[in-house]
Image (tube, rainbow, N blue to C red; front, top):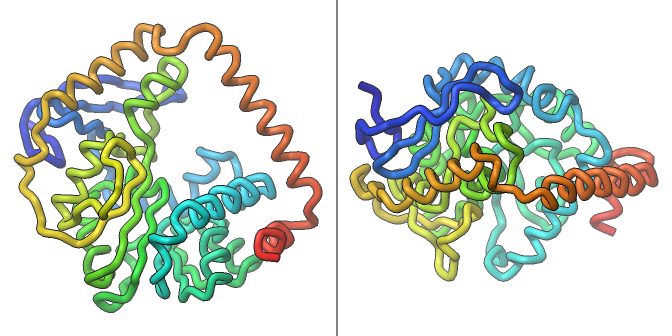
Length: 311
């Protein structure tokens, strides 16, 4: 019988057999800890093929970022720096895993950091080099290596949900992080996803794991990470520091399972989003799209967007 990849308990239920596009995809929920994951978990070879060629096209319908994508990425990266300046004040070396179009790396470089990145998608990695002259390796993380304790700061922005073995993945990053370094992990929150998204539009082949705050913290603990000081434990955007590795049994939390199960029940009943939300959310998305298109249209190319953020 298959077991939960995190808590190792053999108490799973199938919660979906289709992805958000109606294609076949089985997703399991662990009744012991609330881990939500695709089954079977893709192999390394399958993921390499998917992320090097297909992911960006299937997710954003593009092979290189559009100006609106870069503008959005710069805005979010700048907000991250603005909100975490004090915590990041001692950073000199950083690694951005899943660096996308290179926007975060570009801003980090302008701050004087020795900033390096890893991006598996060929179009995005080449575009980042071309427009922003950033140091970015095109490939999967297991295709590269760095000396132990190379980085003050490692960033995973909407990356860990795409990883087939997240504990081993984080454990490898732990070796690259300095003893007093910071790891930042941000992922979608399955509880908010279930309540906020349209019925049946949750799961995706690329999102192998669907984390809650509890399972994200537990995943970090299994890899030898503790929450950093003054970090709220109720979010799925977390700073970690090196600590002692925990045990899979420490993740067992039936309350977390029950909360996720309740969110999923609301989602599939169609009662999670009121009619007003179902109308207003697409309208807000359309307005955002129009604004981003208008703002992006003012720029000659993606390079000029980066220059605007650093002038």
